[in-house]
Image (cartoon, rainbow, N blue to C red):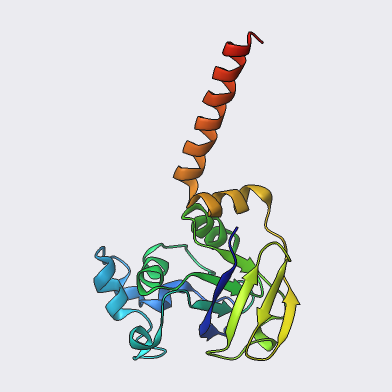
Length: 180
């Protein structure tokens, strides 16, 4: 997977953070992603949409994504250019949902004490570290399960399954041609 590099656009230091708060529970049923992006982060940083840049990352505390996993808040974040989330740990339902959407998640115990907002950081998947270029430090993260890495790399569950099906067809065709 390619290295992810960006700034720390926001740090959610609340344990058990419910991502619905990003857009506000009253807005959770909005289906227009541009409209969702307009209301995103209003309770935390009203100028967030003006400050965030493509490639920026979010940082979270333990059990990030707690609650009923809904897709609209992170759709809004992706629309604004956020490239992934690095957290101390994740709620399993949130993790599964976002990985199936192809949205990179990095479980990195110690990340809260490692970064400050707007630090320039990168996730080096091959080396298994998050580098803080602003501070000149690095911290290891927990490796992704292979299937999760492949799903993120493919762009989500549907592209992952299509890729697997194509590979299986290719293997079957090769076996038929080879007379195996």
